[in-house]
Amino acid sequence: MHYREFGPWLTEQLGQKVQKISINAGFTCPNRDGRVGVGGCTYCNNQTFNPEYCRTDRSITLQLEEGKAFFSRKYPEMKYLAYFQAYTNTYGGLEELKRKYEEALSVDDVVGLVIGTRPDCMPEPLLDYLQTLHDRGVFVLVEYGIESVHDHTLLRINRGHTHACTCDAVKRTADRGIPVGGHIILGLPGETATDMIATATELSRLPITILKLHQLQLIKGTRMAQEFEECPDDFLRLSADEYVELVCEFILHSRRDMIFERFVSQSPPDLLAQPGWGLKNYEFVEKVRSRLKTLPDIPTA
Image 1 (tube, one colour):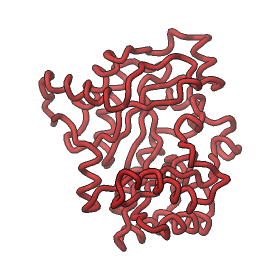
Image 2 (image 1 turned 135 degrees about the horizontal axis):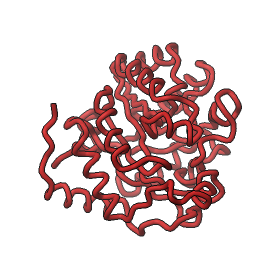
Image 3 (image 1 turned 90 degrees about the vertical axis):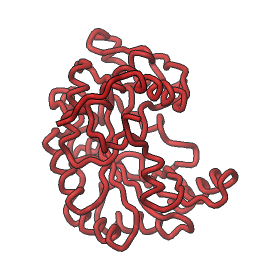
Image 4 (image 1 turned 30 degrees about the vertical axis):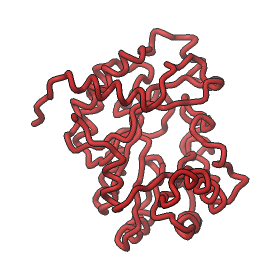
């Protein structure tokens, strides 16, 4: 096996199997409300990854209880991580953030937090608090939306931060002993396969523990879907097998201790401006595993 998998690592960290439950805690984003920008990233539509129970008309506690009810039918002994997923989950006053995180941790069988956020939204006082949780044995994972290491791409997709900002946030978080995750989109406009492999090399220089790779999905109504209609040649549109090759090369150019949580994303078909591949996540993972077995390893420095 050429890469480390997220599930076994998580079980090792917590001494038992756990399940993430996505919640929408009512956050917005500085790239939407005008602090950094307006309109958000050009690809963004949060409907694509929020489950049905993940709605702002339900409290954090209720969302977690409904998530637990869903999973416990099959796994009654399961423990859970509250996954603050929608938008920027560190964007608020410190006391508000603490109240929301601690509400989640007060729910029975919730043993930790996974916090999705932007690199430009991690102030030192919040890191102080997260370190306090970590030091008292609460599992905390901060997942940064990195998306690309190339500043020209970040500018084009209206991301609102630079790669230098990412490096700073990742390093400051890792310095506290808190595991760091990163989210990368492969296939953003203007990027070549060579650019994406360079992303793997660059990220391997940072103290990132976990990576999530997603293929670019063009969502109806987004500015990026319109951009594709106007300039399709700017996009590297790959078949499933071509994307498998790209993911394998990405893995082989990454640090050997890097943990990969996922390689693809599945948005609802009715939201897609371009058809998907028709593959389940586990089917794609099997393709990657099979292909990696046929490839020679790449020596690392």
